[in-house]
Image (cartoon, rainbow, N blue to C red; front, top):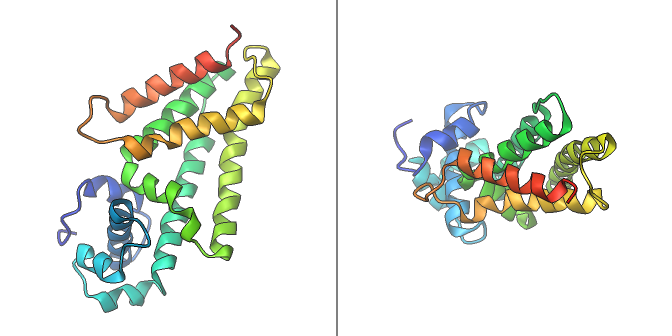
Length: 206
């Protein structure tokens, strides 16, 4: 795929590597970049097609509407996040929470273009699509909450409001996508390590 001049193309392509055929994947990559740069409502299907190096009519061969493109981006992005948190390992609660926060914050930095769309354009989804994505978000929240709960049960975390703490941790990680720039001073791994340390300081007994 050499017809697009998207910044961070390799990372975007990695996010959508399971999407086939090639033209459908190119459309998603272009849409993610366009939505992140201009916002969903300011982006036209012509903008997306131009970034993908295809004709405007080609969009509708693979997607019924601009909203369906957004839904597919949201779906894959949330599924990727859930799979990431579900793969976290560690012998004890402190290690598992540390690994979870590092991975989640790091993902929002490394794939900031996609993450920005996934996290900040939910309001443009149809009611049906929003409900499907909302269920994935509940599962993501439950997974992160389980890491904190494990630490509370083991007596290594002091968290009076586990649900509130979970939302704070998720919000902290998600916000990385809003401000992160690849030319900044910290790499995604460094941001992940920093945020993991901050979260552990939040939940450990004072």
